[in-house]
Amino acid sequence: MQRIISISRRTDVPAFYGEWFMRRLEAGFAGWENPFGGQRYLVSLRREDVLCLAFWSKNYRPFLPQLRKLKEQGWPCFLNYTITGLPSAFECNLVPADDAIDSLKVLSALFSPDHVTWRYDPVVVSEQTPAEYHIERFASIAATLEGSVTRCAFSFPVRYGKVERNFAKFERERGFQIFDPPVAERCELANRLADIAARHGIGLYTCCGDLLINDRIRKAHCLDGEAIARIYYQGNWNGVTKPTRKECGCTESVDIGCYDTCPHGCIYCYANIHKEQAVKCHAEHDPESPFLGCSRAQGEEFLTAIKAKEQARPKKPVQQELGL
Image 1: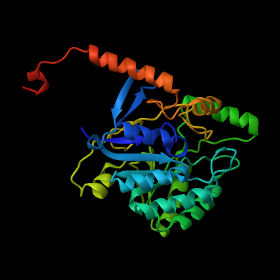
Image 2: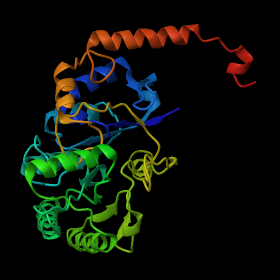
Image 3: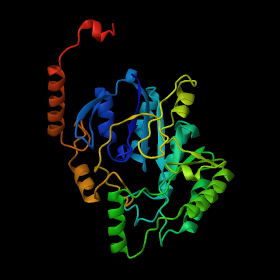
Image 4: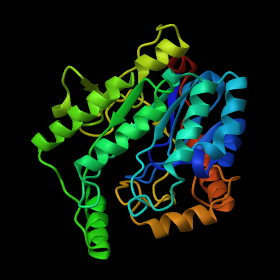
């Protein structure tokens, strides 16, 4: 069965693990560990099993050579690029927004504007970044990206437990408050962003925020099966919507990323318990490992255990295997 491979909601593979991914693609599989149950699996990356490679990143610059190679080899690629331009206090290890914008334009030229979704995500409203800050920042980025993208997805932070703890720690250390705007204020800000986006030929899509949907703001599908089908399969494929959280509109995919491995250090990140652990995992990661975020020896140990379990599994009769 062909699948969309998500690379990755849980970490920034293009920025930090590009070599690892290309080695896994060459090997034809990647190891994956369920972050909630701990079970480990192998995900096929053989060309015949991959419907599309869907990437997520805040810095594609290090991965541009690999993307050129993937395009030359005929791999279908779909690209989510997060650019907010938030102050470094919120996104402490990111490249400057201007650099990210430049590399997004390279991606758009390499593939097309339809292949790339700009994510202005999340919209962090605080004493340092009030609504007017976002209006000005969004307008500046949208004007620069005009003609390079056709879609922008945005959301407000989801205050999971770990995010709430990170926000509280941030407020204590920085001395200013992060707000959780009421619905009316979110709607007003979202509608102003929609007006700006429309002036630059960009459609605005709300990610996990159905209350914001109206005639100018549509529901986001960050992994957009319809767009992938249109771009690569002449519309002759129907993906299944499989939300990853409340009000998510994404098409079903398999994500091969790993939590607590992204060194960007963004305070709103739900995929890291704390940034020190992520930095440590990145430093100790071996690109030769079948699994992301661990040493080669540990990854090989996981791989051996999976293969042993597969060999021990009772074989089905031929008739059952064929569905007879």
